[in-house]
Length: 394
Image (tube, rainbow, N blue to C red; front, top):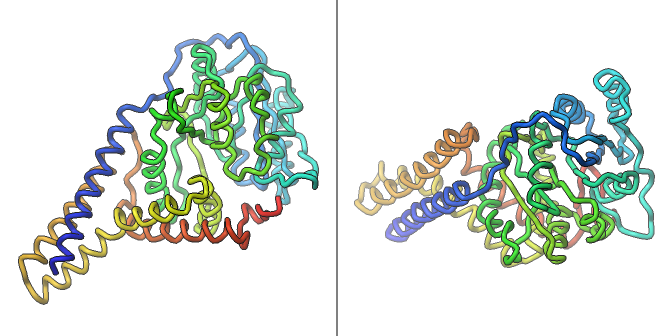
């Protein structure tokens, strides 16, 4: 029973420590600032949207783009359809006609078949194809499942030009579209805040490099200098790989929180969530077995163990009262209250919903499973897919 008490004390200290670290990270994190100007910026910008089987998302993305404040004098949107097997291409053509009134500022092209001499994976190929079709000063890569606020791109472009940033990436608000996301995404957000401190990413003296694939704004000459997506053709987690290349060239990398300016619809159901995170987890930790396993254990201990201990101690307490078990129950209860307080604080301070917070215990078990599955898939290639495409074969 004394062992359970020690575990409960650990869960409380861990929950409190995690909250303090996350709170510090959020408070000290730079946010994208709004610019009160209606004048297009004197530069050129192309937005490239790689799209593979995005018929459920592409309409919302393009509709949001049709309503943005014009970011630059010369401006273009290029959708690169990566040989979708659904109605993505047709959907974009319809939107071009009905929403954009056949404007030349929106173009859709096909990526064509991937070359067989290289193991092109993920969205690297359509991004590469798109980058070869443009000549603007700036390139913005966004995912087809993002929804942009009216001022988001303008504010980002202004910031990048003013501060001479070579790669500016934004952290979006992650929308939860299914119960599985409500259980898992808040945990993943916590891990990213702890594992990739924004202050370290933005510090040129620090080797930590991070970028979010849904929004990556490059100075074109810097993008070409690091080799662009051709240099990361076989990288599944290409956003972090590109961020590292920027820093390795002593170029300026900046990562900002923009949860009020851009939102992201990552997954539609449990299966796609498992497929998506299991392709990224192990590679995101640089295939470091120790970090991956210890990270999964941390998640279980921090998010799932408090719930298990709480219910176990309650059952024991009702059947066989003891001071140790009472204290165990109280400490695990405090750990759960700490997590709830963190979620309430995030909701009040940053409008991040606290819905289904009480399911984080199940979420911790799911993340633990994802981490082990990711290791297995990455090493063996079995089931290592994204939207049905085998990542081990391109």
